Length: 223
Image (cartoon, rainbow, N blue to C red; front, side):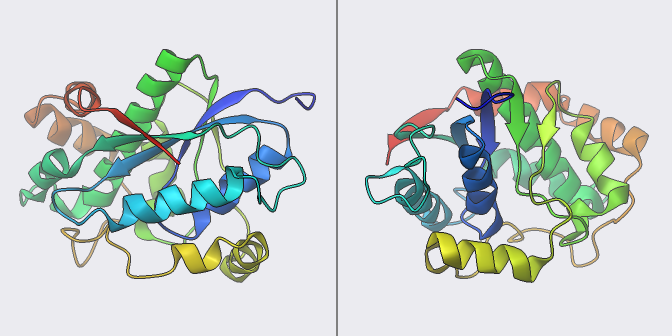
């Protein structure tokens, strides 16, 4: 393992960005534990299947990585979150839906990190690409994490990320309609108020309680 590397839980979706983030950290010698937060039953399992295919491509015998992707292992952790996310459509909190979603994902990543002995969390976040990734929202999302968050794509241009995905061979796997906004607001907030987020989450039992309920349904899928 490269100097300065370690073990991290990577939040991976069926989109273009997160496999590139995983690949960049694998190339640095990190051991990666991939975690997919599934929006089922709000959506189909398409995002999970795309994530499995991307991880298999990066970690398999034909991996495009010089290291062979051997820091990735062979299992994807999957946690269903659709039922919990559907609670954030109440009028007082719907505008903050995407921020609540990312905060939930971070809590789940922290819980898995504690279980597997990881020291960091990795995301495919990129400044300004979507509403939850504005500077005004990234801090509120990060506040839900007890672990340092690494964002290897944070300041990259989207076109550069797409070129990286094509070079890795994950672009075609990851293309297709995004499902994360299936019940999201038309006009999401871009500058979250942390106090408001905490108050809204408290109404539903708190982000920790919500995450624990989801984590009970954790399952592992070999890729």
